[in-house]
Length: 115
Image (cartoon, one colour):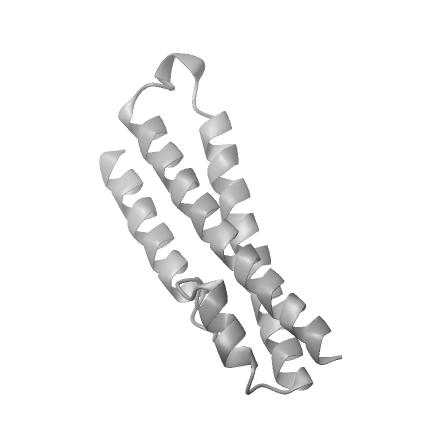
């Protein structure tokens, strides 16, 4: 059981890292995006918004899977190691999702300025 949990964590981490490899960088700050978008045209900004929307959808799906996993852990095991790991993954995914949403919002705001 521990090996399966370990493998699941490794696969989740790999998917997490690979999930944003399509030109979406959640580590960029909104200020960096504002600066970069100055040199972008409307189509380029729309393209980035679409990429962020896809990344947000993937991240939301991952978050739902982890939330469902936590909900399926019996109440008496909610304080155990497995539940703690799942909650930590949920926290990480939530933080990542917030960054992606903030960046997508910044691109949307920059797009409205160019129109």
